Length: 298
Ligand SMILES: Cc1cc2nc3c(=O)[nH]c(=O)nc-3n(C[C@H](O)[C@H](O)[C@H](O)COP(=O)(O)O)c2cc1C
Image (cartoon, rainbow, N blue to C red; front, side):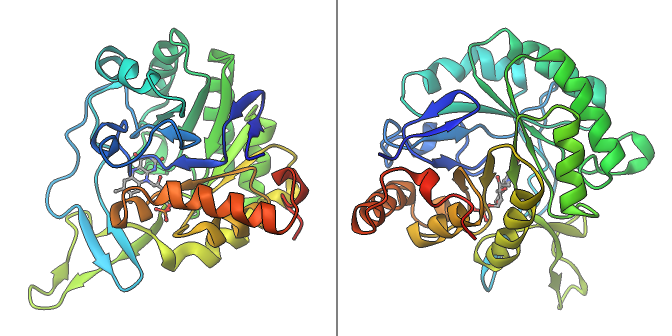
């Protein structure tokens, strides 16, 4: 009843842990049934190990959190060596989230993932500080097109491209990525945001700005999912401030085949189980046999 299909990959249900908020599942295993959740998108992986940013990394706001983790991760090769087998024990589908700062590094990472039996790559094109004019891959359509096309040539796996809400035009960005060969799109990543320590008279984060996630971004993320669903014909995985099952249903109605849950995991580690149960109860009550009946009905 809850099963969803993304480009031939079948998920037991539409609820996936969002990248960077669930690690590789290890820390959550004592609290969450990893056989119950639909999937896990790994912490963003890069070709070279990254220690992450200095200074404050998380800051709580009135209705969300800001983070400046800086893609801390052990590298793709160490992940494959040390963490992949752990993740493979469970029914949750594994999505390899790949980040980077240079095109060449993305391509080298893809080559390594290609040798594994992971079925889906989630290409995170929202990282700042890239070589090409210092422009984030996910802001300008032509830069995004170029990297997605190059990655597409390197992989036969399902290629899901994760869009930044900071894109100049989210609809044009979605179209560019699909034209370049994306099989699926996930959105949204965090919003550029600022917090200030008034006594130090300085920004809270060393990088000045940081990424905002959580309930504050939900209505904007929902609008973007709907806009993207209106212009492309590939499965969409929606996220941004999903805190309960009703939020998840909203994202499905706006056009998401599946959803990702991020910030909410920090508040209640097993919240995805509640969201899955809530979706199922709603389907029974509303006599919905398959989620495709309500996907994108708005
Ligand atoms: C602490 C933290 C770390 C994150 N790290 C990544 C990452 O490595 N790669 C990525 O694609 N997204 C990353 N994200 C973004 C989330 O996957 C998600 O897109 C965003 O938080 C919006 O969903 P939410 O409001 O449910 O948290 C991170 C988010 C947070 C809060």
